[in-house]
Amino acid sequence: MLIAMLACVVLVLATILIHYEVLRLASTHVHDLPIAPRLRIIPVVIAAFIGHTLEVWLYGLAYWALTGQLGLGIIKGAEPLGVEDYVYFSAVTYTSLGFGDLVPTGHLRLIAGVEGLNGLILIGWSASFTYLAMERYWPMHRETRHKRRDAAPIPRASDRV
Image 1 (tube, rainbow, N blue to C red):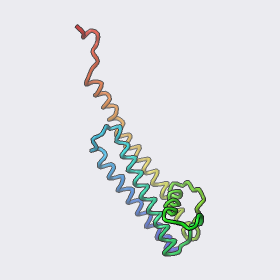
Image 2 (image 1 turned 135 degrees about the horizontal axis):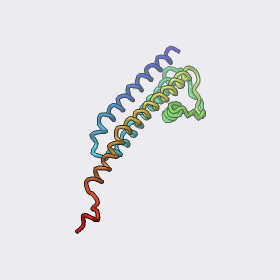
Image 3 (image 1 turned 90 degrees about the horizontal axis):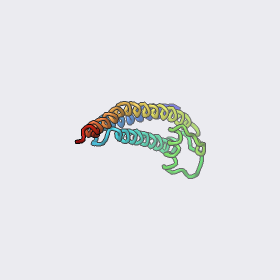
Image 4 (image 1 turned 45 degrees about the horizontal axis):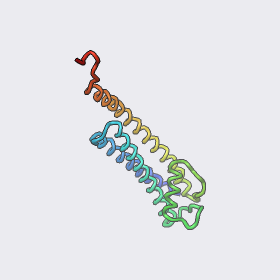
């Protein structure tokens, strides 16, 4: 049980660091992209998705290592399990979807529970970050439209000779 608790702490800290760095890099560099402000939300969402994917893989590889090397339990379901099955189980757990076709046993149940909570928090963090990015770039979208409209005014009938 102590190893499972230690694994939980390490995995939570690692995923927080991954998520922080991915969102920090997105925040730092998205403003410099030579694209319209309304399109800048796309790299923000892609960055968040990449962060979540890395975190799911980290948990998946941890399940694979902890079942094989340390014997903290098994994941029951389709046999034999490959690395992709552990990553699939991680994705279903991280997103709190929980299909139930793969079920952890032993101390892996604790890790799976912590992963669900961790995923919920990190997904919320991404949603918050995306909202802030939209709040930052949405006014720029309106300014760009107004500048374009103001740059080439439509001639009035009275202006014609």
